[in-house]
Image (tube, rainbow, N blue to C red; front, side, top):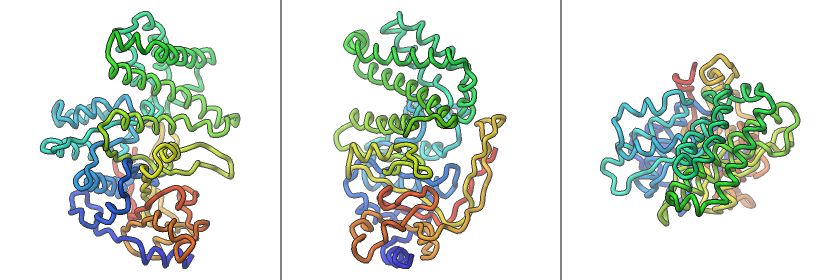
Length: 420
């Protein structure tokens, strides 16, 4: 433990503030730490935390204003992201953002969008926004099925009855989040569950088989986007089944990986369709951005988005985890009667576990600070931290392997809007 503490005291970079609007000079060491990486993922060890949202906004500003990043990819529905991108490019009025976000889980996307919209009014290189997730955070397939229906109505109307049947089934269990939709899905007749899966699988095969026909009747961009919407719906459907099997005790190993695989592919999809050299700020939970598989009690639960991106991009993928050592975390308690299927209760953080990186941060008492774990990996055979002991309290994974850097915000406060 003393080894970890000494290393942090000697190498961590103190941060002067969490204020998103404050000067950014204290973040300058981050420029060298990230190097030439194309995708910088910023995490959080809990949703609904004020300080994590503030830190993400500061890092976003720094990466855009000083490092030339031009895409914000967020843990938000791929299909739902298109109107938000149009809004940050200047479409509609300022007040329309509230309409776009109405009924969605308050994961902290609003303030970054407002900043980007203002930034883009005078930016030489406007910032784009993209969602990367399955629709409605796994709460509904409808945000993806609607655009697919619109597309086939133009290029392949004979398939529209199948889309309409899938939409009817999906409507019967749609919710505001997976916490409400997943229980409703399990109550569907098995024949309905199977029919939905079969329709989506058949449509996916058809889309891919007749690409040239669809492109001839429309264009390549329209086809690419429609196919991705359909893939989002199929991944969402798969996730319902995988989660149901997991809770029933019959799940296959790592079967819940479908959602994270889709998110990783969404990031790569955007990179492939962006100008050479485009750099992306990616915002999601620590559990999604980490590069190591997720396990519980020694059993493989799934591969996170960061695992896939690290395999695809190598050093071009950089994972920056956010954690805290004091204050409260957001305890999400299932409640089917709540708007999102859960309530959020501020829960005091316990003393960090001995040997964890949070314990080292707490004992170093540096306040908000940034630790470069790539440097720690280089020093691991010398005076640096012990790889087997530098764990993350809140994820229980080897933090040196899972992340490239970690920010300790020192304290954490649950967002008022989340307490519903």
